[in-house]
Length: 349
Ligand code: ADP
Ligand code: MG
Image (cartoon, rainbow, N blue to C red; front, side, top):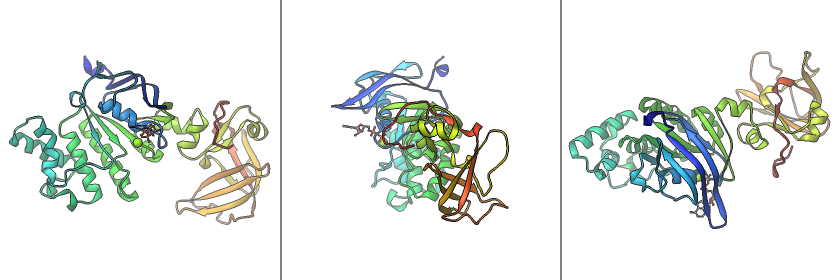
């Protein structure tokens, strides 16, 4: 029963380019039908993992299985996956429907079936009216949807997407995020989505692998990664965190090891808050940034620790915090996330 096998299984996957280890012993299973994201900074190995799965690169070591079959040595066209690239790579001289039908033509499918299937794929991305246009006559978002239709028309079991929304402006990107999710749900195929944008990964994914230096730093649901990061790298990369190193953790929290507290779990008042487990620390407002939906306050605590506090713009919120104000920053002990004792260079507490 191939369907009970994971869509993808990577075992000890490693890719070296000369002295650079781009992918470093990655083990990973992705379930059939999952919307799975690989999230990480530039150069962390995400694209290389995708290219290894697609077969555009050969691993230095390790294996790749698709639905239980070892495809490590197979050519790209012999794997049931397809790729959507960031630059879309549409053929400029072909109109939209011919672009979409291209993969079917290469597979020797006749004109009639080709055009029917391409029309269906175009309808799935709501572009059926633009079938006769050339790519140059489309907006960025429309081109992106053509690329998606072209990749899905051959009905791959797995779709690989390498930063497919990277070229779009914010508004369009947010709109396309919603559409991508709907398309994935409609098609029911496995999406492996690469992004360096943590918000995009959190919004779209069933699960996320956070990459750092060719390795998976943490694997989990968006909720797990955000609420329970297990390292300073993840706490800092996924969302914004106030990081307390060991020394400051001992002083401020009475705990050993590194810790983090999310900005939205902190509150700023003039007199502090009462209650079991509430920590109150005095400080001075350094910056108050109005965000519309909220206010971001940067506060220097009296021991020198700089924290960021995110306050919702709700009724009754005090709007009078200004640079130089003396305040009390409060948070609950339950919202302190332990991060172990590792030391990561480049991230200051
Ligand atoms: P990401 O997609 O996360 O930005 P990449 O997978 O593109 O990261 O790159 C990972 C590392 O491998 C980087 O250090 C990059 O410079 C290196 N790399 C990627 N492709 C090649 C290549 N063809 N030749 C040499 N080095 C490469
Ligand atoms: Mg990349």
